[in-house]
Image 1 (cartoon, rainbow, N blue to C red):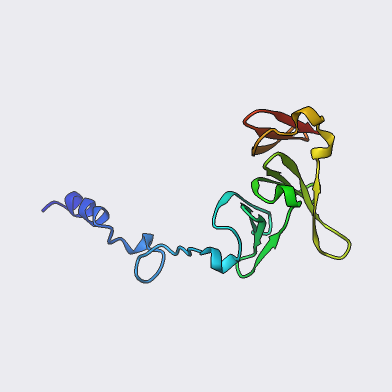
Image 2: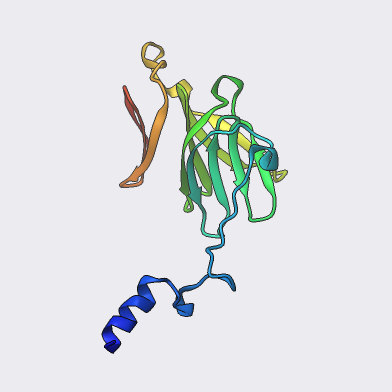
Length: 154
């Protein structure tokens, strides 16, 4: 058998120890159940800050996970389901999209997370705009997009 065929079979069968993730050759993946993070089972969006902390747009608000501990940040009662997240490191804010609401969360002087809705800036006749599905930063303006409307926060 020629050596090229042997090398091909070696890689094809996945027995190359250089590419294994642990002793068994399996990738290390951890799945979390809603009972682990004590919130709604559906997560809509995920983002990570520069420290490696993960933030999840969840049916009960925004989840924060530092690799060991989960923290649920509740939004306003009428906007409990978070659907999109954008982290603005320059302003130390996390922008949140929800159902017919959007705003940001920040850490107050006591070290607690607070949610500030920006819906009050929207004209009354277009406040029923559905779910915010995407949040972008374009030329230092935050754009909140839903299926029906786009909002620019400057």
